[in-house]
Length: 372
Image 1 (cartoon, helix red, strand yellow):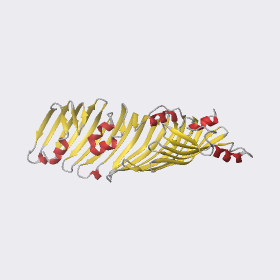
Image 2: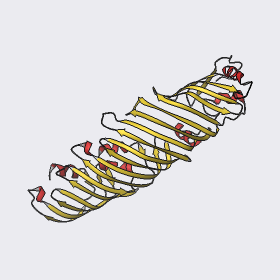
Image 3: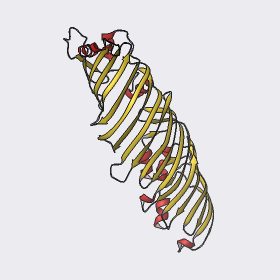
Image 4: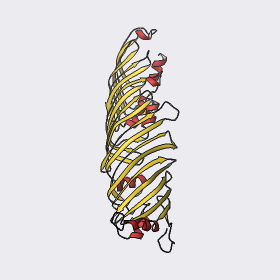
């Protein structure tokens, strides 16, 4: 067996010997003259650590090229079907496969790098995926493949999409996720991403937009506990970073919430005690991401005859550092000039964390305004 053949064959493991029916011819001394036609069937086995319930294929070896037809790899959640061609002289494997197996679990069949790329993504029980391309064992830069995945129950971090689909392109040590489209908490999430692996710490760039997303389940998922804040979210963002370094994470974007009940948000909760039952129904802001925090200078919430405005930042550790003020009758003719004065009187400094916010009146004694 040539070193290249060994490199491809050795990662295979079989719980019991596979059943092989083969016709062999050629010269055992000269690998290029050695040939066979075979049918392979196996029960529990694995390849590159990817566990399989079964495997079968038709094999044909000619001039150090192994042509695999009718390939079928079976797992509990689905299977992988297709063809591949292993060129032992060129040290390459070309493949064209499709199936319903979990892409994250089966990515290891393409190599360690593919497994690392797919590890953060979790797929629900229903998957329809295909992939085709080439893996170069000598020069990883020459590895290239494309894939399309549709899944129900797709998850990333704490968020889950009812249904999601995307096209993936891996080439020149870079992975592009194109045409991402997800049914996301009652609305839509769309975008694209690029991961570059040419350095020790891979870099990434996300561009996405959201429309008609239900705020309540979204915040419940983000905070990992139920949220009372309601509303419909729309917005967009661009984020780039490097590896797991949060200090390198940067971005910008905008958001708008409508048809909501926003007083339960930690940032504005104190105003519900100041202003009574007036409902805050909409909010909008632009924001920037830098220095391990999300910062805004123009967050505004509309509630009847007044507007609550705020500027400050939310740290990645959940810490709040904001100034909030309520401005009454700002848009009313003749009396709108009093709004800034009243707003300064009702100005609060918000600190603490998202789970335990604190509020301190800035310009009036604590005996005159509620504090926490």
